[in-house]
Length: 164
Image (cartoon, rainbow, N blue to C red; front, side, top):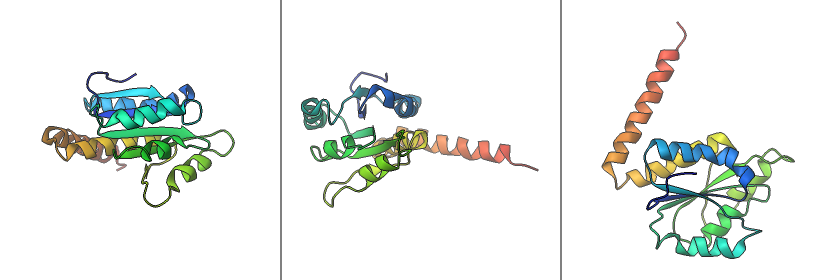
């Protein structure tokens, strides 16, 4: 899962079942050649690991954390509470409430501990990775150009799909 050398982005999720959603973030980061790591870290089942991960991320060179979680979805907020690195939360669709529980849990952080909250599911994972790329591109002109080209390709595809 993901590129492993000197990661700039960490993609984390609460359980293996979240990979079906979070793999889309991995795919986008790979497409942009952004060094990243993908890990399973549970806020509830591995709280010590989660705290150690969050506390060490900055010193390991991580610049953005993408955290996917379903249900109570505490992972993004708990990680954000323990680091100054930007945390982007991806609500994973839950069985009972279709991800609304996850979305509200991630979005409703108390003032002072921000988590950038994306859409539920695949679109959220894709956009979290694109937002991570945009954050990194602020200080990396070559990455900015890759992002510009990606956007131009999206535009061209929509224009070529237009109905006559």
